[in-house]
Image (cartoon, rainbow, N blue to C red; front, side, top):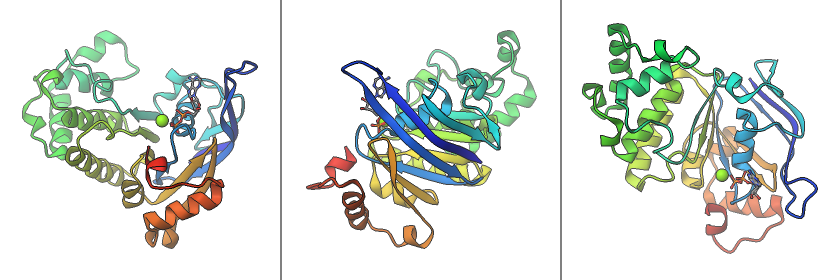
Length: 264
Ligand SMILES: Nc1ncnc2c1ncn2[C@@H]1O[C@H](COP(=O)(O)OP(=O)(O)O)[C@@H](O)[C@H]1O
Ligand SMILES: [Mg+2]
C-alpha cells in the first residue's frame, strides 16, 4: 500500500550542521496496517512522516502509494491521499470558526473557497452522524466556535476531519502527547476505533511504549534514521516493554539506564 524504498533525507547538507535524518530507510505497509512508530528523540520519526507527506523532497529513494510513484509529487497534491494529525491541538482546527465550518473545509478540501463555505442539510446530517461517533456530545454543537472546545475535544475533531475524505494513509505525529493522560487515553481509543472502522492504513508516532504495543498491529522502532526493529504477529502479542527495551539496546548498540531515554 505504502512503499518507501531506500529514502535518504539530509538536513543542512555540506554545512557544519549537516544531519542525516533518514538513512536509506525502507518500509512496506499492507492495506489496513496500523503501525506504531517509536524511537528516542531525534531518531527521525517526524522526518519519516514529513517525507511521506511531502513537506520537502527526499534526497534519494522512492515513495509510492498503491503503486503510484509520489516521490516528486508536491505536498498539496498528496493531500488527497494523505491526512495528518499533529501534536498541537490548536493546529488542526481553526479556533474562530464553528465546528461545522471546520468540517466543511475538511470535507471539501480541494474545492474552491466559496463552494467550501456552503453547508447544506446533507452535509449537516453527515457531520452530526460522524460527530456522534466520537461520543463527546459534539453533534449538538455544530455552530459552536471551536475555541470553546477542550484540547481533547479539538484533537478528536481534528482526527474526524482527517478521516472525512477517506484518505489512503493517515499520519499521526504524537497526536495525544499534549493532552492530559486521561484525555489522551480517550482520544487514543477513539483513534483506534476510527482506524479499525474505516480500515485506514496508519502510521502513528508515540513516545509511550505502552500505547505503542497496545494499539495497532505492528510496531517499528527507529534509531539514527533507520528502522532497527519491526515487530508484528505473535512476537508483538507477547512483547513486554522490558523485552522491547532489551531489544532496542541490542539493535542500536546503545545502552540505556532507564525507560526515559527512549520515552523522551
Ligand atoms: N527542518 C529541519 N532542519 C534541520 N534539521 C532537522 C529538521 N527536522 C529535523 N531535523 C533533525 O533531524 C533529526 C531527526 O529529527 P526528527 O525527525 O524530528 O526526530 P524525531 O521525530 O524522531 O524526534 C534530528 O537530529 C533533528 O534535529
Ligand atoms: Mg518528532
